[in-house]
Image: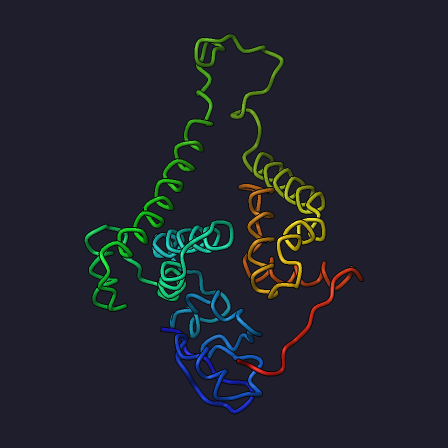
Length: 274
């Protein structure tokens, strides 16, 4: 469980207690993680799912975590991202929406149906079978999307050239260099360069303000920044696809910066909390 410190009164609170604390401490605008000292404004702390480990904290600047130890965390992060996108882009009932937001605060969400149901019943005290079933369907869809993405990547791998100059039964022009003829570091550099260029092009092509205006047409009297931000970021992720290299926190800052630069938009900070 991640702990935060209120930057106004200095009180230490658990992650699931931050929202209640903001109602008690009216001057609380930001909190800081007690482990990594990173500062979070507004609802940014909700994206801070897991902090650095003790090994990373005290291991020095040369510390490198084992790749195998991060696989579970990567899967959890992708799962949580799927839930946040679902909340932002689909119409979900109030009880289910609230339950999903509560679930995303945890870092150890079970991936098996029976354990997932027990987790909701024991940890979140959910007793409604229909609500539990609906929540599982959304999480299960996230697993299916993850599997499909992995299968697509596997199917994109080409056959290995044979010694007689053929690949998957097709002749290979002798003047064309095979991957084995090109240094590995050159291929790696080219792949990174192409990925960075594609990501930059996709980011530049996406019109944050136009996407915001389109969504605001559904809210004639205005809308909370959090609601607008979620929907716009969901549109951005759908636009760039797998080439998105930014974290949710970085996307949030990009969204706010783009709107601040455009005089058509006005962002208001409510000093009172209701």
